[in-house]
Length: 165
Image (cartoon, rainbow, N blue to C red; front, top):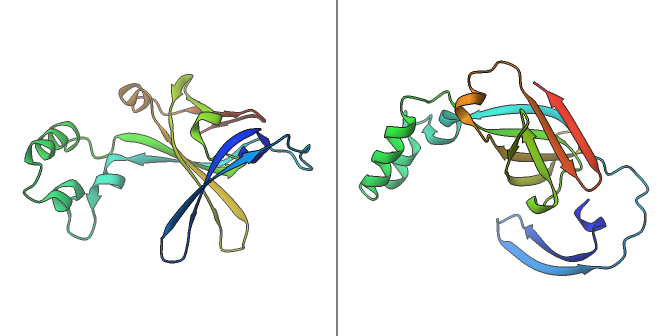
């Protein structure tokens, strides 16, 4: 959907060796899309602290494994904040269709509060269908983790998708 917006765009391509190539392209007046570009949210997953920072193989905090003796101050700050909160939700991963690749072209609200989009990826599932995944930061972690029902909205220039979970 990004390429239906006029202006300068950056495109990044990863090859099979994970080598990244970046290029800038200018989009003129786009044609009218033949299909709807409205976003849709098909799945929402809460990403918890332990999902990101805990190394399942070594049974240690990944930050500790990665930094060993370097950055002890950072490690101590990290552990003070998160060690006792491994099940705290800090991000949402949404899967669906027609998410914007460039985060400034979209915005999201979680329980009515603005949540910054971290990244968007496009891939194919086992059946060859295109799948969009976006990571959204949870804006108020403490408030979020006290509720059992949540709502996320994801808005682009082409529409808004809303999902309760």
